[in-house]
Image (cartoon, rainbow, N blue to C red; front, side, top):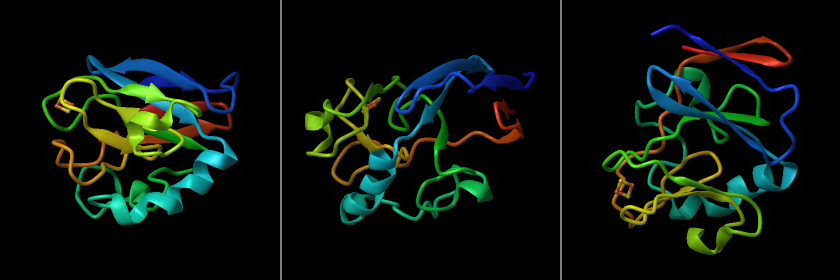
Length: 144
Ligand code: FES
C-alpha cells in the first residue's frame, strides 16, 4: 500500500483525525497539555507502560509513544480481536477507570490510555500499534 499524507494544520487540541492506510483506520490525535499530563498518572495500571513490546517503531518507544508529544499516531484497531475502539475525549473517561481520556473497545471492554497503552485486566494483550510515520513538515505527517 502507498503511504498516506495526513494534514494536521487544522486539527484542534483534543481532535482525532482519521485516515485510511492499507485498508486500516489510522488515527492522529492532537493531544492537549492535560492529556499529556495524564500519561504519568496511569502507569501502575498499564501492561507495558514503557512500550517495550515490539508493536511500534523505535521513535515511539517512549512514554508518549510518538515523535512529537502533541501528536499521537496509531492504527485504530484493537489488539484483541480487531474491533475499532472508540475515542473518549475529556469528560467521557468513566469507561477508562477514571482516566480523563483514552480509547475504549466496545467488543470486549479493552481500555487504552491516550497513548494507546493497554490497561491491565482487559482482554487486549498489547498497546495499540503505532505505524511507521514521519513529519514531512509542521503540518503534514506521512504514514507508511
Ligand atoms: Fe477489542 Fe476484544 S476486540 S476488546
